[in-house]
Length: 337
Image (cartoon, rainbow, N blue to C red; front, side):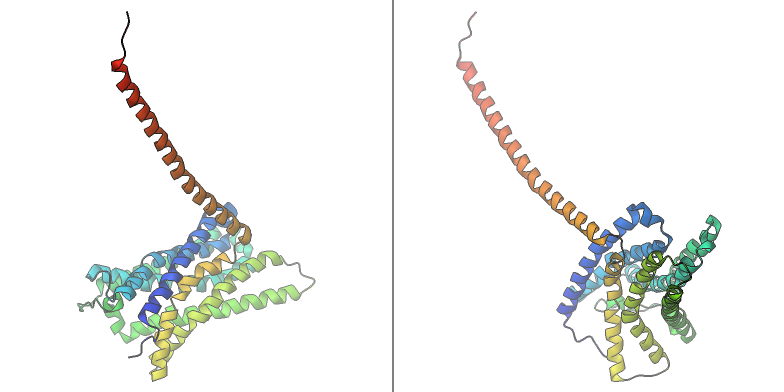
């Protein structure tokens, strides 16, 4: 069985450093997307916002538990509920992210070339909000059903990630092929074709001198999508290709090693996604400078407050000491009538 040749301690530090940096970046981007009114109301940011929230859940649950395993060699807990929940988070949220990116590639064509389709609240609900809701609901409901209700009574292994748990549904060849086709091949196809198609349509439209083009608006949405698409090309597509080759019976020593490394580096979709999204924020340099100024100011305040508290305590002790001295002196004084 092929394994990642990187030492376990190296994998631990790679994941720990990458995840910590990614969590901080996620908080930074989510803060601006949620509290900046203009960014929050922009339709093209809604899918990105949902992606970052789901990715943040992965970075604070699934990945820390995996880091714990890399550090100690055993899982944090080995109970049926924990192992099933861990597997649910890994599969359901990862598939949700890939499907949302595929939908974003399709939706960008509507936002750029057919924005009148979203002119009313009713149209926005059916063409913009409903697909996002259905994608999230489908992945959660499907995986909850197959993991909690179709799970087999298998032994749980504390020294294997996810306790070596998987649903009985994957024993079915038909279901495994269905999952590969819908969550792997179809998503990869939509991401590749619709992203490339969007770029081609924009370039063709821009070259038509007689047609007025709002290139600034198109550029923001296009760069945002293509940045995320490039991330999936690098870390998602290899896993899909190896899945296809494995399903048709192709196997070799090199293929097994490639599968292991593809699965290992697929986590960098989660690590790098916040940074890719941060790169598309307007006035990014100014936002970073403001964040650093706030951090510096907060650090100074924390340094001043203990000093002020220590000074106040010193003054209080001095005042108390003087009061005690005066109390001791007063009984020796003679009171005159």
